[in-house]
Image (cartoon, rainbow, N blue to C red; front, side, top):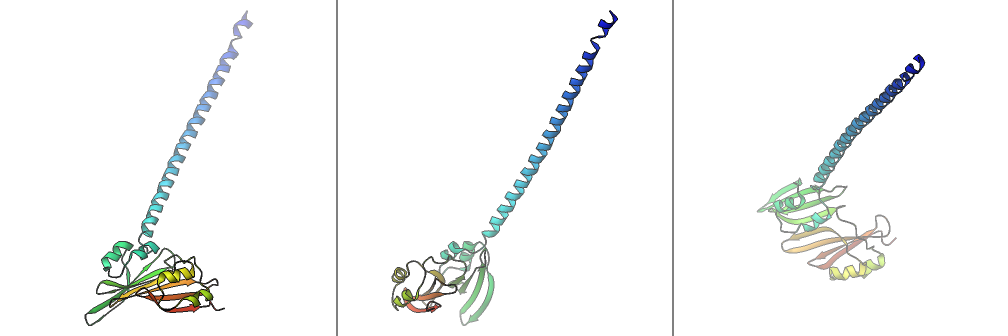
Length: 212
């Protein structure tokens, strides 16, 4: 009889073992949950930091000159109007005053390596010039196309010959005379042609490397 009374003892031991295992599993789950939460917070902070950094970069970029802003600047605009378009002050390059005419030239940089130079006479835009700011023309110049361009042609007539718009490099208006310089790149590196339009008509042209 004494043997049969002591038989249930192992069941208690087995029960305790199961409880211990359950406790361990719960503890592991809790630790994992905490670690996951910390990781989520870290990722969230990291993402927030990345977003803030991108926003700061975009804000910085918005103060640079680009093709769209350059196109909006027109002869006769004031310095303040130009600053409003570009969203930043220009870097003064030169200033002089002859008689009643004060001439000041400012420079703005693009996001890349391009620059735009704008000249004001008595606080009015008289000239704008860019290098590397505008997108290059997809139309390619050749010697044959260049030879077809004649003095007195309109811009549209030249575009029809070249097969597309040129890259506006300079736009000037002084004493009522408008002058615009357009560039078309050639097929070879560093080859191009430049054509100047005075009051909308071809007044001069030059080429580099198209005859090779």
